[in-house]
Amino acid sequence: MSNYEFTNNWFQGTTKPVWDAIFPQLNPRKLLEVGSFEGAATTYIVETVGALANVELHAIDTWIGGIEHMEQGLDMSLVEKRFLYNIELARNSIDNRLDLHIHKGTSDFFLSKLFAMGLGEYFDFIYVDGSHQAPDVLTDAVLSFKLLRVGGVLAFDDYLWFEQLPYGQDPIRSPKPAIDAFTMIFGRKLNYIHVGYQLYVTKTAN
Image 1: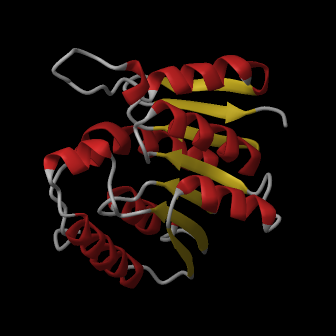
Image 2: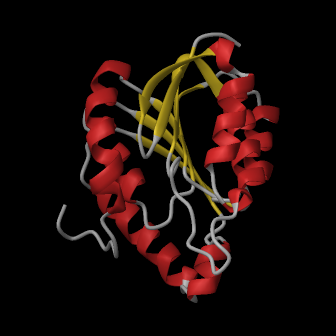
């Protein structure tokens, strides 16, 4: 939809082609997004999944930004406003019911809260695109695994992302070491379905 307010095309370039291939096979109805930013992925879910059936969608974000956003001086209050505007446009574009839950706060708190609410092994699809700091990504991965049903897909954005820092690359300020640690430890309960700039796995066992 041309009326959306996005300031970048990250989703179109890296995520959309993979989702276009995965979603028709997975047919997700209960989805969870860790890190929503301006809502590019969120609106895709609403328009694509919501056009076919009722959908339950949980979106978690602080709308404070990560270290890299703070260093750029990005006004995250404007990012949040664009998210709310975009998601309302998407909601109005579908006829099916959208059960949308926006959780404003840290992912460790809300992922744990969802589990405490009895939503373990509940979601069909979980997209981890929040903090780029390895400790945070590892926490998001482990908690998301508990919330994902067997047969569901766990997706990690920015698997190959890193910052160009004055002193070079800092592995702790990158998602890859955390994702690698998670997939190694949980490897007997996962199947890889896509590895590139992003990484996608199917949960095969609890």
